[in-house]
Image (cartoon, helix red, strand yellow):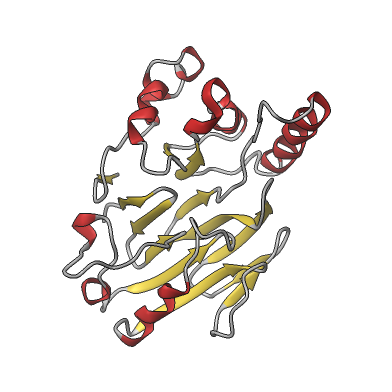
Length: 237
């Protein structure tokens, strides 16, 4: 069975594997009549799936407690949340450096260079990485020392993944960083790599990702980058 990836919005994606339906960093409202094809989660469409919801941190563009409403419609649903999220719901919390075994999948967490964690998930013979806000955040307003430290912190975390055979990687490429937006993306692909790489964290400005197909830095791996344009776009491998 092939693996299907669905773009939902920003850093939010759904991934359907042989026996799981993963949802990452979902925070959107569910409009009346909304569906996966429109880039939102309609719980009735996934009611029979083995659903696992991952949330990398509490920032409102990555997390909303609305995700717990799905429990009333989905018979098999679990939640794996970063330890910085406050909730009384029944979930599996994970912190940076931890590994948890849920039986049918194993989850490891890296320390974000912002807040929360990045996820490394192994299930159904696949290895999936979702960065959350773990990125090389280089901002013009920061001092040179701060910029240097930010880069070192990022590289130290990504270096922990050396040797992993990653099938699918969701990696930030934030338009707000301008010419520095590909720093983290490029370092990850050159240091760790992935069979398929998916840019994210664009706040819906998906046109920006076209630079990944023309920037000289990506020449060695650009044929492995999935560029999408709108909510609900799908890719299979």
